[in-house]
Length: 597
Image 1 (cartoon, rainbow, N blue to C red):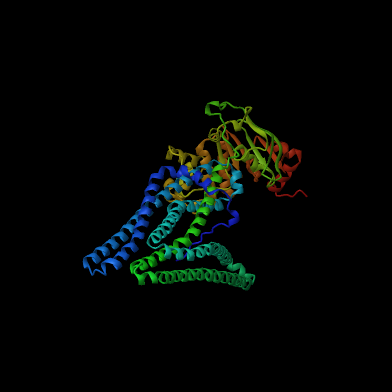
Image 2: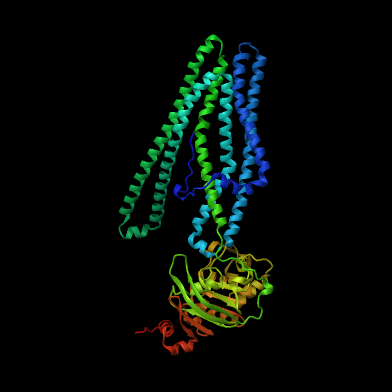
C-alpha cells in the first residue's frame, strides 16, 4: 500500500480557515446532488457491510460446515461468501460511479462560476495574478474539490465504518482478545500522524528538486547553441549533476521513510496475529473460543490497520481540499475595481459633444503616480493623438477610457456624465479597440473577426477587410473566412494578425475608436495600408490614437505629448513644430532622421 501525497502548494500558501465553514460555502453547489450523495453513502455502507460479512461466513465454514462434514453447507457458505464479495464490489462500483459524477458536477458548476466571475474583474486583479499561474491554481484547486466529493469524503466514511464495524464485531465475538488488539492499535495510530507528516515534507522536497532539474534541463536544451559558443556546457553539466545529487539524496531519504513505515506496519499486523493466537490459545484449548473465531480475528485485524493509518491521511486531504476550496471562494469574493453603473442605453446622450478627462490622477496599488492631474477633451468626430516616450502614461489613459481601471482621483465624462455611471456593456458597446498586442483565438478567421458574436454576415466581414484593403487575407488563409487560426495566430504573420485585429474594430462600427500602438508591430507596407484605412474610418467618428510612429498622426485634430504622467504639450502637428519643444524633437528624430544635437 502506498499513500499519494499531493502537495502542489506549500503549506504556507494554504489559508488557515474553518473546514466546516468552507463546507458550508460548498453546500449550495452540492445541494442539487444531495440525493445522489445520500444514495452513494448508503451504497458505501452496504459495501462495507459486505466486506465485514466475509470473515463471519468464514468462521461458520470452519466452525460448523467442516466439523459436520456437510458438503451442502460448505457449498452453501462458499457461494454465500462469493455472493457477499460480489455484492460488496457491486455496491462499491455503483458508489464510485455516483460520487464521481457528483464530484465532476460540483466542480463543473464551481469552475463555471469562478470563470464567469473572473471575466467581470478589472485588470488590476490579473496584474496581481498572472494568467498562467491563476489558471493552474484554479485547475489544481478544482481537482482537489472534486476529489473531496468523489474520493476523499467516501474514503473517510469508509475508513470510519470499517474501523468501528470491525471493532464492534470483534468486541461482540470476544472482548478480551479485542482489548489486546486495541492496546496494540493505539500506539500505531499515534505514531502514524507524525510519520505521515514527515513523509509529506520529504516528498514535497523531492518534487521541488525534480522541478528544479526539469527547469534547468528545459532552459539549457533551448540554449544549447549559446552554451556551446560561450563554452558553458561544462557549467551546465555541473549544475545538472549538483541538482541530480540533491534529488537523489531527497528521494532515497523519502523512500527510506516510506518503506520503513510500511515495514513497521506489516510487523505490527504480524504482531497482532501473534497476540490473537496467544490470547485465544487458552480459549481454544478449553473450547471457549472456536478456531473459526481465531481465524475471523486474524482476517479482521488485516482489515483494521490500513483504515487506521489512512484515516489520518484522509483527514489531511480533507483539510487541504477545504483550503483549495477557500482559495476558489477567495476569487469569488474578490470585488471588481470597475463596478457596473446604473445607466442604460436609454440614458446615453446620443448627440454627445465631447469626452473630458478632468483632473485625472492614477497609480497602481502601492506604486508611484502614473498620471498626475491630466486634463484634456476629445471633441466628437475629432482625432486626438497621444505621443511621447514609453512609460509616460499613454496606454494608461486608454485603459481608463476603456474602464479597465478606474482613476484614483478625478473623473472622465461624456457631456458632463461620469462614464462610471453607465453600465459597462452600455459604455463599451460604443467603443472599438485595437491593441498593440494582438489577441487571436483558436478558431476560424470569421470567429476571430467577429470575436464569436453571432448574426454578423460574411458580407459584412468581407466589407470590413476591404475597408482596410486587406481582402487578400482571404486568399492567404486556406479556407477564407472558414480558415483555421491557431491560438495566438501563430500560423500567420504578425502583419496579418494586426490586420485581423484592426478589421475587428472596423466590423464593430464603434462611435469611439481607440488605437493603442496599432501599427507598432507591422511592416511599412502594412502600416501605409492601415494608415489609409484609418483616414477612412475616423472620418465620421471619434478616435483616440496612441502612437510612437509620428507619421501616422501628423494629420490629427489634436496631439497630446504625454511625458512622465502629465500633458507636457498640446496642439496640432504644425503648432507643436513651431513650438520647438518635445514633439518637434521627436519629429526631427523620426521623420527627418536628425538628432537634436
